[in-house]
Length: 272
Image (cartoon, rainbow, N blue to C red):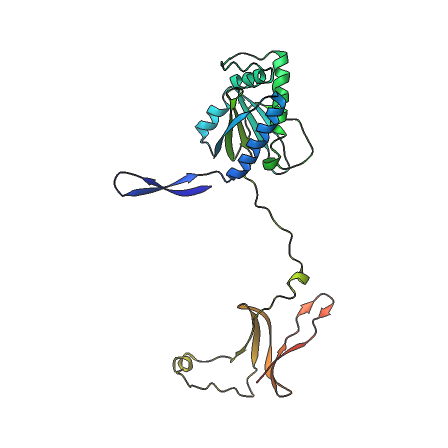
């Protein structure tokens, strides 16, 4: 999404520029962060402190830096797909947290088979905490992918206790606005609407219209085929003939085509 942003500069002059901003609400990212924190605290058997970095739309260069030598796990959902992004050192740090050994050092090496199993379990735990942005569906284990698929937004979670670890979350699309059920006709039947009946006076010359002044009478002759319309909220809902019936001004609504034959004739009476 492009947003107009004003940037403060020297003096009192401000310049404007368009910036891309994520449409993922910050509260939705907070829900994910809290769910991950609670799930990891239960998995590690220790208190977890976590910091959230707000959702952003990284540039192409930033995406390349994020995905470089990173482990990516795709999580499929009913509303959107997400990708968990872990640097190699962060994956090892998570494994050490699971084993109760958060020594804080950064290692760049291949995980052992035991560490691989621990990392896979931690990633599955994080994936289960993404339902608020991915939607519910059939539970699936996250699948390892080479790089993050195309994504609309990205945010990071930084564990600060028991170890310092960064976990990236890339989301394939922004969440759609929730839609309520459509209203039934019976639910609108009691709504009061202002109805206006207008009379068409046929064709007039431009000279006649230019000569109109307050108090001018426009004659209505029997030879005129008086046409009128019925409007609600400025929108025409029916047309018909204007006249008098039983001492009351009336609009006889024209029949319209419908399935199975012509619509019945109806009359709308107006007090004279």
